[in-house]
Image 1 (cartoon, helix red, strand yellow):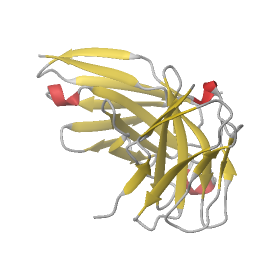
Image 2: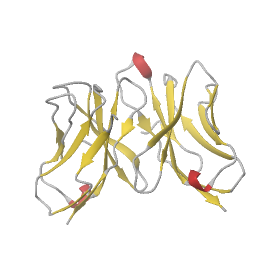
Image 3: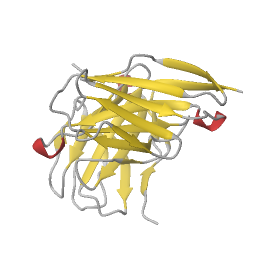
Length: 114
Length: 111
């Protein structure tokens, strides 16, 4: 079965509010995680990544949090904008310890209400 | 600028025909991947390659094949197209076991 999944398939957020997208993983050996954004009609686009030796990483308006204790990953988007409307995927990789590709979750659709 | 391209962007074919989707990357990445994307299933891995002459089966490889004769290209072939293979196909590449860069996708319709 799939080891990467999502708690919420859809999320509606008011423009200017913060968004939180969650992801659960089941493989305790996973040591690298990525968030992708996919806009309609386009391929997935890298947002931010985090390795298992970290519990938080920040980018421009985005923060990824990793809780290894409960095998949970979240993406926080600050001051959500209409351009943030897209499907967001988390993905995991067990890193250099295993020769396996990324495993993707099914995705969460974020809709920003103007 | 380095990039990853896919062709064609849209394809309509008939059941039973052989179809080849092209993927070309100019990053000189060793790793290349093919995914299909369907509603309710997210991205599912079809085949992948870690270098020239290397190919591996993914989660949904039945009915598909790939070959890697050079670093830049990983064509995906549907030997005998079926209606169940109507989907959007994405190619991706990566330097190592980390971030993958995705192409724009090919929308394939099998009638």
